[in-house]
Image (tube, rainbow, N blue to C red; front, top):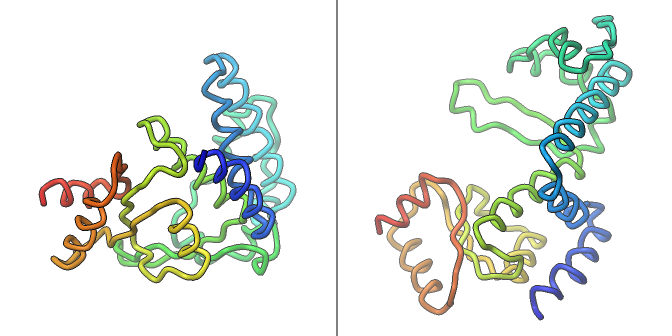
Length: 210
């Protein structure tokens, strides 16, 4: 009952309040599992074609290249240059097809030596989260099940704290967790039944080792 309440009431209301599309994206992804290989290939090609049309007509960076369209989406894709981090840093404003102020900024860790910033729409973030949830569902997870999740965003703002509470989530650091982090996490686990564990593979390995 609680799981149905979360999915059918809380999540739709949350999407409406935040301007996101998580539950719609998740339900759309679930439907894909019922499609045949032929149908998925056709859908993939159609979406690729739509993406290339959008890039060619809406991004100043790609419009300036004058790449000719091609009825073969995969052949057309080969005409587009591969962007590296330096390209993204140098041409961010020209690459973006919408106003930067309407997007959410995301920064890489900089572990490669150069930190890079990209921008995502709320819909793109919703799709990413929906796919992550669906991957968990393939392993038996259901929205509302208790879950111990590892991650890097330890500063949980009000929205994330509400999400953690409603989704019965215990959030712990993925990298270099302390003995106290483990003590608190295992204490929480001991009070729950049928808990799922999700997050970075390396951090899940460390949890299993402990």
